[in-house]
Image (cartoon, rainbow, N blue to C red):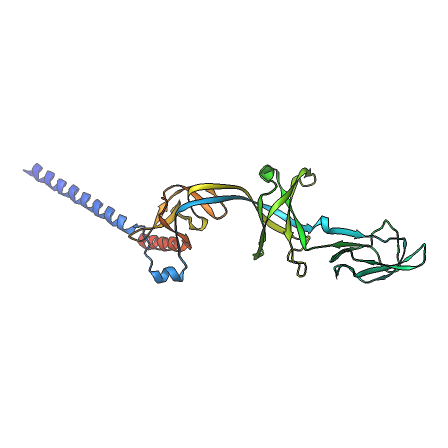
Length: 307
């Protein structure tokens, strides 16, 4: 009788223990419910953008350092027609000149007559090689004149990117210090020769420039982004949509319950979009902009439940 009573008591304790574990498990599952519910007002206030997952053309790019230089096809040296003494200079370094303006007067050694040299086109004096009173020879330049209505961008390409860069590829020129300052053009030349001192190859793009305000100043470095490949993929999401939550790459997907973090596997990353290999179907609606707000909300809930 004593043995039977002891066994019955033990079975009762085990039964209670199992019930407690099940209750705790259910409580844990409820606490970790990964759903964010947002009102329409909150979505508007925080600019939560919803987009339907769909096919996209990815632009695969490379970031390359560039430098603005004068257009060599529109840059010339101004030489005296006859050797002589510089009598008067009307333009100096950095001056803007108009086509036909007098630049300098020179007294000829042969005729002792003073003749004028005028600007063959409009541009800027980018070099000044003489001063009034100096003797100048026919083979010695007095000025260098550059038309800066167009400028070149020299791209410095390192070996690992050399085979990817080709003539005709789209390239964006921009200044990181000025987010609003960017322009798209194409690579119009790739040098067949390497640059020995820095072990790079050279490519070039041409930019239209504001000749009055000089938007792009020769001598300054710029950032460039070259499109090396375009690829169509079945499903892609905006890069800003991807978040890391609990060590996993997720996208917040709209469901009946709210927004849920969906673990996804990603492929190629383009300039604006990333390929989705699994985890998301075409047509599903996801948070494309400001998804970090939903991530922060989940992390806040996780911390509160842990206490």
